[in-house]
Image (cartoon, rainbow, N blue to C red; front, side, top):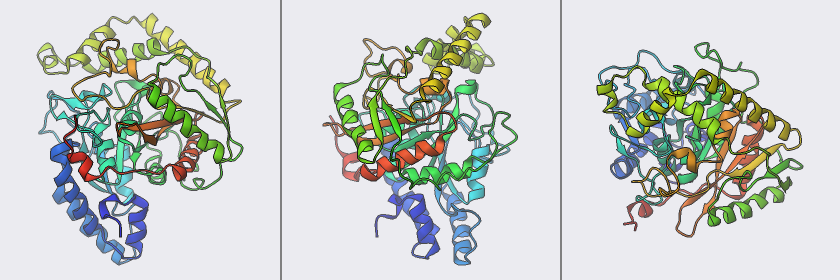
Amino acid sequence: MQELASMSALELVNNYKTKAISPVEIINSVFSKIDIYQPILNAFTLIDHDGALRDAKASEKRWLNNSPIGPLDGVPATIKDLIFVKGWPTRKGSRVTDPNISCMEDAPVTARLKEAGCILIGKTTTPEFGWKGVTDSGLSGTTLNPWNTKMTPGGSSGGAAVAAAVGMGALHVGTDGGGSIRIPASFTGVFGFKPTYGLVPAWPASPFGSLAHVGPITKTVADAAAMLTAISSFDSRDWQAQPSVDHDFSADLGHSIKDLRIAYSPNLGYAKVNLEVETIISRQVQLFSELGAVVELADPGFHSPLEIFNMHWYAGAANLLQNFDSAEQELIDPGLVEIAREGTDISLIQYLASTNARNILAETMNAFHQKWDLLITPTLPTTAFPSNQAVPDPSTQKRWPDWTPFTYPFNLTQQPASSVPCGFTAAGLPVGLQIIGPKFSDKLVLRAAHAFESLCPFVMPDQDIVYLPHQ
C-alpha cells in the first residue's frame, strides 16, 4: 500500500469504505508528516492535533457503522489563515491582529467542509492580509518551497500549496485575488483552481472586493472537483454568491475533450517568459492535441491590464488599512503600507475609469470565447526564485504583479482558471500550465485539466529532496 499521507482524498474515502484504513491512521500519518516538514517548510500557522484526533475518532466510528456524515468524511483538510474557523483565531499573517480573539462562526467554505465530514488539521500561512505573491510575514516568518528550500513557494496561498505538495493533508483552501492559488500551485507542482467569481461563497467580504476568489489546492484534479462540489453550496452571507444549481463538479471529469477548440497563447501578446518555461509549456500543450482537441496559437487581443489591476489592488489596500492607526501601520509589511498610500491618492473618477476598462477586458474575453472553448497559457513566466526576494528580478521588477502577467487578468474578468503541473526545469523546479475558460465553465476547465493530468500526473517531492542542502 502507498504511503498513507500521500493518498488523494478520493483514495482515502474508498479505503474508508472498505475498512482497509481508518481516519485515525490517516490523521496520525499526516501529523507524522507535519512533524517532519513543518520545522523545515513552515506551512502552518496553527495546528490542532487534539481536535483533529478527536474528529478522526468520531469519523472512524461513523465509517465502522457505515454512516458517514458526508462524501469527504475523515479527509484531512486545511484552511488558509485569512478565513474564519469557529474557535480558532484568524491572524492573517499580521502582528496587528489579536491572537486572543477566536472566531465566533465558520466562514462558508469552512462550514461546507465540516458538513462534508472533513477533519480540519490547521491553518496555513499567508503573507500579511494575503497582499503579495510570496509567503512571508512578520508574524509567521517565511514559508519555503519543498522542491528547493532556498526558494519561495509563491503566494499568497503558499502554506496551502506546500502542505498539498508534501502530503500534510489532502484538501487545502486557498484564496486568489490576483493569482494567489495558481502562483504557489505552479511553484510547488500541485493543482490549483480559481473558480468563477461567486461560485464559492466568501464571507466576510474581502477588502480587495470582486478580485478575490476562494478555491481548492490539491494533489489531483479529481480531489479539487470533489472539494469544489462541497464548498460551492449557496450561502446567504455572500450577496454575490451564485445559486447552487447542478454543482456536481466530478460527474463530467472523465468525459473526452475531443474536438474542443483550444487557443494557446505563450505570452498573451505582451508578457516576457523564461525560455525554459516557454519550451516546457509549448511541448506539453501538444498533449491536448493527443487527447483529440484542436489546438492553435491565438492571443485574446488585449494589452497588458497591469494598470487596471493595480488601480483595483491599491484601492483595496487603502480600504484594508484605513482603520489602522500610524502605530499599527508601523507593524505592517512596508510594501503593503506603500501601495495603500498610493491607493489613497486614487480619485473616484480614476477608479470608475479603471472599472470601465475592466469591463472592456471582460467583454474582450467573452468575444474570444465565442470561437475558443479554452485558453492555455503558462501559469507564470518564471519558476520559483529565492525566498528572500519579493520579485524574481529586482533590477526590472518592483512588485508581485510585475511578474504574474498571466494570472491577475482573469481575476479582473472573474473567469475560472487552473494551474496544472506540467513538468520540471533542468534545476528540478516545477512548471505550471494555466487553463482558462469562460465564466461558469468551471466543469469544462476541470475536465480539460483532468484529461491533461492523465498524461502528466502529479509528482510528490521525495523527503530526500526537501532535506538537500540546496545551493
